[in-house]
Image 1 (cartoon, rainbow, N blue to C red):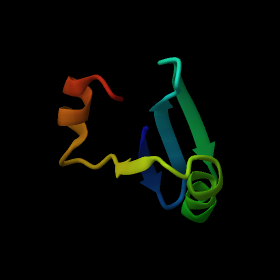
Image 2: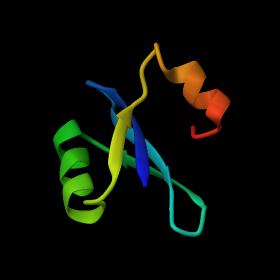
Image 3: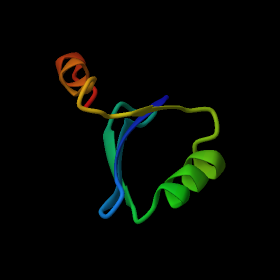
Image 4: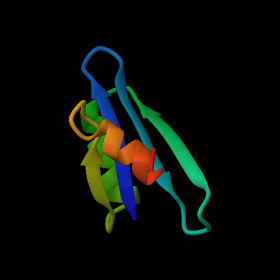
Amino acid sequence: MIIYYEYERVLGVNSTHDDDSGERQYNYFSSLSKFKQWVSYEMGNSDVVEITDSNYRQLVQKGVI
């Protein structure tokens, strides 16, 4: 599973991933550290990709965000 996330220092972290049934899930975390803890404890086998200005269009074209 791949978790895509967008981090804004003031706003926190928004993340999205597709669960095992293929349903898209969205999550919000108030800090990057809380997001990293969630990934570590709840989604341990997942890869993490930060959404940036340079990869945004590519991720949209792939349909993953």
